[in-house]
Length: 139
Image 1 (cartoon, rainbow, N blue to C red):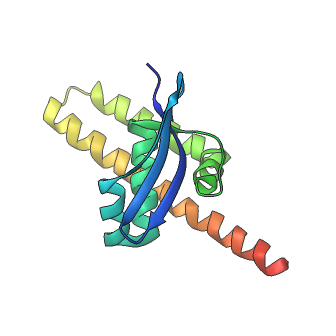
Image 2: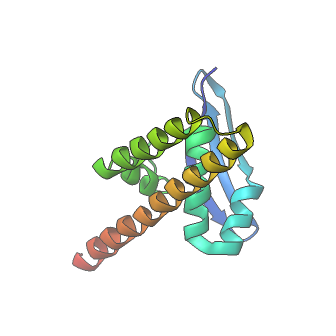
């Protein structure tokens, strides 16, 4: 079974909603309130939401079709430096795994490295925002 596809993200007064579906089942489309994203957005604003979205997109789901609400994540995933950041992060994780450290040390290191990656990718969303702002000012 393939990963869930995220088609849209909506920020409403009562939380953050995702529109998702399974790739092999068109009838599986649904919109639902995501507690983790809602809490992250309430706690840390857009940057917290971006961080949690990259966690979700690396560990649980994939992006669906490009919608204006997901455009920032499509943009970041298509940056050349994103591939390099991801490759470096996962190479370091693999090297640590084979270094002979204990499983608990590996889990801690793995989480720290992934969190660092997601934070760096969330910062790249700021670059997208600046480009969009400049485009809007040019109009």
